[in-house]
Amino acid sequence: MLWTFPNYPRKRIYNPYRAGGGPSEGFGARATAEGAVDDSVAAVRPITIGEIEAAGVRIAGTILRTPLVKLQSGVPGPEIYLKLENLQPINSFKLRGAANAVACLEAARRSIGVWTISAGNAGQGVAYAARQAGVPCTVVTIETAPETKVERMRALGAHLVPASFDACWEAMERRTFPGVQGTFIHPFDDDDFIAGNATMGLEIVEDLPEVQTVIAAIGGGGLVTGVALGVRARKPRVAVFGAEPETAAPGAASFAAGRASPFPQWQATFVDGAGGKSVFPRMWERMRPVVDGSIVVTLEETKRAMRLLAEKARVIAEGAGALSVAAALRCQADAGPIVAVVSGGNIELATFCELIGAYKEPKGS
Ligand SMILES: Cc1ncc(COP(=O)(O)O)c(C=O)c1O
Image 1 (spheres, rainbow, N blue to C red):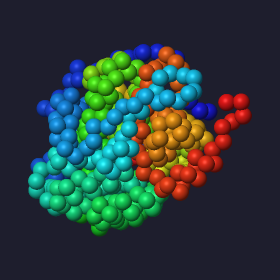
Image 2 (cartoon, helix red, strand yellow):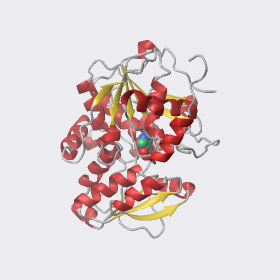
Image 3 (tube, helix red, strand yellow):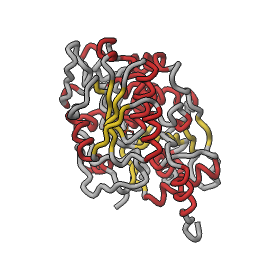
Image 4 (cartoon, rainbow, N blue to C red):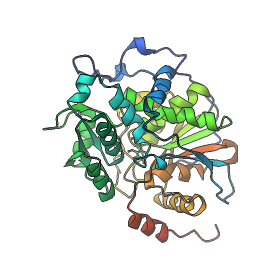
């Protein structure tokens, strides 16, 4: 059964910045001086507003402060605003976290080169930041990555090591991959990466102080966690939801179960940038206090959102980038204004045209 948008109660108001956990209280999955990482669930800590603001300053010269534009959808429902992360230099939000994570490395760890695991967008982010820092970058590339993302990572100078989805998902937990050297930049479970993502949350509340709800796609959970941390640092009462496709919705399964859960019916689709096979226990620990739930949308709704964005806003969104808009279109009017994060636009144009061309409005809509 699909999750539908309820008249959600403004239940717990959790402010991570008042709950303790400043920089002096542990270092999460941050590397120690020797390079080791404490990747236990117990080491997860809230990221402070100071870290998010510092990330904003650190990455200001690399990222675009993206516009927030109103969607003139012509469809009845709440006001929807689009945070256009598809306009970033790599056409996805991943540059924010990657730029911050690479910049935060100690010089000795950065100079040996960096590597990550990616279906294409995090890989472009890390490759872009590595090129800027003048260090080599390797990307263990998930088999579902479309050719356009593979080519763009290569064009940014990344050395690519293709691997199966399961091998990559496992390596993300283990933080190693056979034969790959350098300093690992985790594409979502990393304090500095999430602090970079969180800078978007600060921009959202600055541009739309009356925002009621924010929605962002869930892959590993770093985007929605970061956005929630940034938004709620300034506006603790704003609701924040993830968005997932019906074919890959471990976030919704985790919120339903109250614990990190797998999604055994997982299928690969055109939504290649989001939707994992499971929520990692550490990511659940990060997400649970600041995210209100995950809205599951169908693949047809995702195509409809991609088409609507092209038609009404002249925006090209990849499947993962349109999930938030598909989810926002389900919301009730009292959830607005809603900000939908258009998290990426990296899709082959031929595929994009095929997907939106094939979409047919249901009769009577
Ligand atoms: C376009 C896009 N949106 C959303 C996500 C999900 O981000 P996260 O893995 O941080 O949850 C990704 C992940 O790669 C992505 O590429």
